[in-house]
Image 1 (cartoon, rainbow, N blue to C red):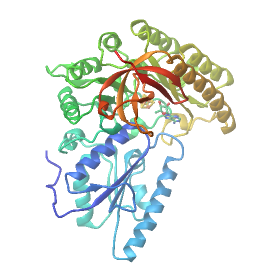
Image 2: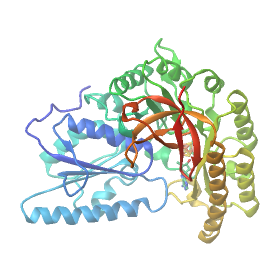
Image 3: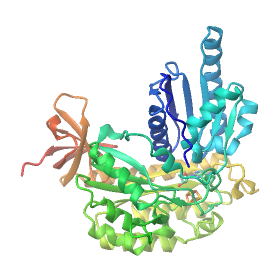
Image 4: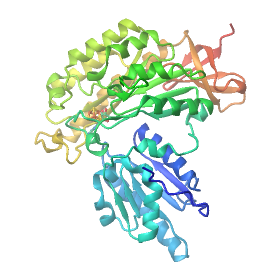
Length: 459
Ligand code: 5AD
Ligand code: SF4
């Protein structure tokens, strides 16, 4: 079914998309930019310069909704000023806040023209047309049966991030896990996987455009079950195997994984597939079984620790990163100590940690035993101190080693380049600009808090 109107060549409008939240939103924003590009829109870097402003919102934590209304308030002032001078601006709210709030946004925030959820981006040209025809705000938050990715595929080419060398590719969206703290199953909907052929085609196009590293994205990326090239269902390991056959693609990463979906074939791929990077983002959220149960994570701490051990057995140099939540309702001091203990036991190369944030409509938000803010602050402080120390220890342990580094872009100083290590660290080194997109061996000489420095290893 075609849902994209023919390009209106008379349009020479400018669009600015502001992205909040996760990499999936970054990916979605890139795809919307391409789709609108095919409709005659050009992308600009600020709301001031734009005719159409899209806020691609995130609902995962904190006062996400308030933030959106305050952003919209600023845009509305700009719009009113323009209207007084005979101009105009179209304001659109997309993403997970749009999905969660729907009509409430146009009721509360005058001046918003379009509200649309993450599953309807491919309909954007039609929605804009509807808005122009009806002169009324348009709200689209259904989960349509047609394929968003198929609809977005009409764009002529992808614009990779990371200066053209690295790109994100969403392969799976949505979540069926229903962790009791999380809005994702409600905002992104049920788990859905793109077919292998679609992902291979998109990646091939990116590689032709110069991309050398792809990160496969999904809320539960290792639950990927796309239809395979032979028609049978394919796992993430099968997809990775198919992608690794693309000439010119040097590196493959994936995120975010769930401890319940780490298949044996995926673990084995870390031992056998040279293009698959030795880095795994595997959140555990908490270190106490009582809290994991209340979070509805569906696994124990022992399961997680055993899993990490099995992965390290086949790939000893793998770096593990994770997500943690402190102050989940009912979390006691002893529960929190268990979180510190699991962190000490695993040893993380990187991690994200958050204070639990009540999300309306999720089961945990209704609990009466919410943890006081002050306690959450103290726990977060202690956890982050431990994780930062581990990250620094990991960076220090890299000094003296030789890593394959993918050169991405020039550094700040003349003659300096910046590349990426297998472990996602930025690596600064002196090298010629002609090396962009190439894998080179670099001896690591020093480490900072967020990056490494080294020199080209001459073979
Ligand atoms: N409060 C705090 N952190 C949350 N996350 C998801 N929902 C919440 C919430 N309500 C965190 C989890 C998840 C990451 C993407 O965001 O750690 O892995
Ligand atoms: Fe949210 Fe849990 Fe699904 Fe991750 S697995 S998206 S934390 S519900």
